Length: 176
Image 1: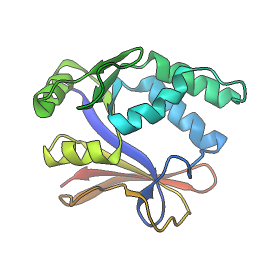
Image 2: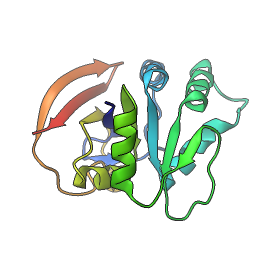
Image 3: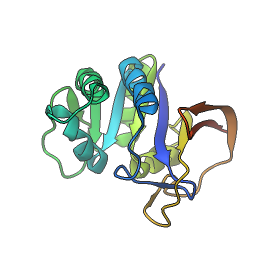
Image 4: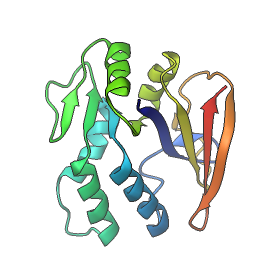
């Protein structure tokens, strides 16, 4: 059975912003390794549209960008959206019954499935489907934006913590 993991870069004050957290090479390598090892990723519409950036080559990429793009393109992706009618390569639109679809994916797969985006994570948390939360804590204060936790959560228990690169701490929590 697959494990759903919600992990994102987060400011000290709890916000996510894909434009404010450019990973250094060490953190980028960590995310490449994670993408290569995951059983797939589940995206909400907004995060999927942001990540479609990796579908096309860019001449200004460093080697880490090329490696991440290759890993992302190979990965199986599922997209939750009420407005999209089509998705890109290796991606499938999920049906209207989110809980049934996600439970089916978890039952059919082994390994980790990434959950991408705080709004989708809230929906899946409300359904009791997220198995682990990974906070990549950056020494930045944003003061506003999309919060990592888009709503109230059940109590969490810290299961691990480690430093990645010079200034990022990864905190891993499970419900309970």
